[in-house]
Image (tube, rainbow, N blue to C red; front, side, top):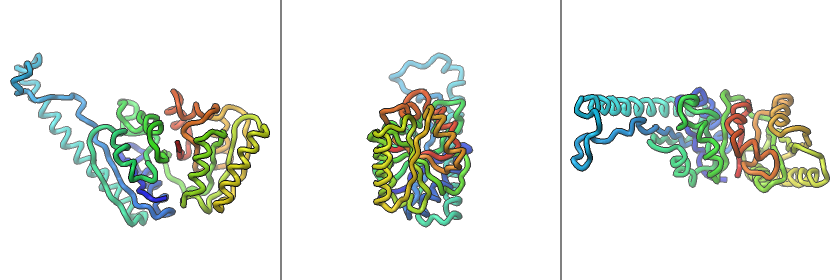
Length: 286
């Protein structure tokens, strides 16, 4: 699989982890890293004051509007400078980690639109579980996570707060199309060989479920990846989280869409809560 690791960095506490995970993926796959920082548009949406075709807004003659426009311009300059500093610091982290090929872009506008712009050249989209000012604004990585997963055709790697070397991988399997795509992706990727892999289904251990697990296991075995299988009882969110914590898995891989209860982990109102609750990074595949 070719393409860049497109890593979105911001001023959140997840930014360093995003860089560390990008370096880990790059060193295992040899893929270059594309750093991207997206500047948010001005919150005021100010327009020019001297357009004769538009009536003057209320309060314009007080001079306050001019001052607000000047403050907006100053804020834009500061945000751009801050963005360049974030990109520079991220580049330094990657260089220290031994990443050979790094490029960087500073963009302004909508995060989702920017993701789509870089998607054709990406092998994976990498971002943090929560973005800058996650509790104060809707236009941040965390708020946009579900929109990105719903629409992105590339795997989405959601970094945890802190990086730790990834050795054990848990695959959430529900027998759906996206789950099989996740298994197929792992079998074709140069990222996973040599890692310890386990495939887990949640529910009853019916013959159909066991057959599906065996099929997934065989697909990985054909690619030289040895995997164990297990069937968990309970609700998917709690069962998978407990297994990941108890057996110290370092990465969870799952399909972004499914036909069972696992679907509720990714699609719907529980998306953000699930990403926040999970302590390990997650790879989501449509």
